[in-house]
Image (cartoon, rainbow, N blue to C red; front, side, top):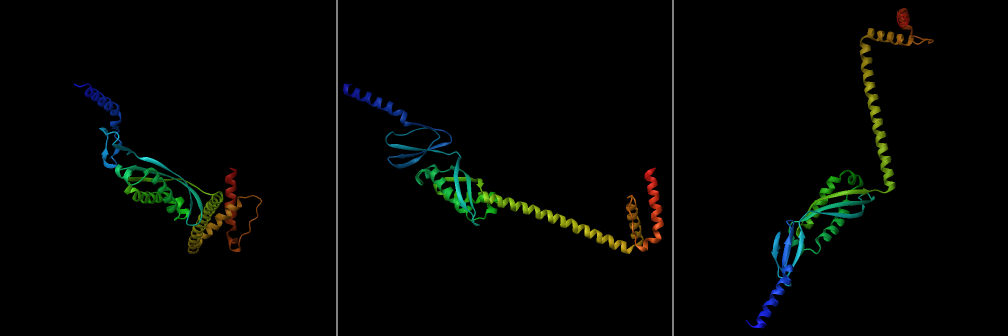
Length: 261
């Protein structure tokens, strides 16, 4: 074998050995590689081991796991002109690696910027009361809008959560006053309802006493008896009770004796 041929073979072997680590690629189960050869899309590789041609192939590695994207605090002006600061969290994942590489540049950054804009737009269309009480409904609305917008990028937005709503100090005091007024209103309503029920029962009792005078007289005697238990108390009775005063005094005397005994 000519010496020059042997040298060439040795050189080729050395080049292959030097390039071999760059040609072998290993991807985990949750990773995919989008492969381009001389600038043209070849396909999606992985998981596992595969080979590329160094210098000719270029690979972009994509993680398929769910990513937690923290949306920076956004200043939102609600429909009723209240300025609040809102924090949110977006949960996203790539379901189409080739679209995530070829149809958008930096899909994570694009989704983050889109999330910030969507949060301001959607929450700016509702009033403060709805923002505080209908958070779950707003989360679903944000998730639907973001998911539809990122679908062409091969990105799935699985959930959006409004993490925190910061209110101005003046608004916090106003809400506290509103809550206090609401509790006072409920208290007054409960008291009025109790008065109404008591008046209704007393009206029913009056009608029953009117139909049964004897029961009314017994009630009067019972009342006088309870009053007579108090010492040093002068009781003035109506004239129609004069005939029954002896009964009242007798009953009072018997009660006093019973108490002393």
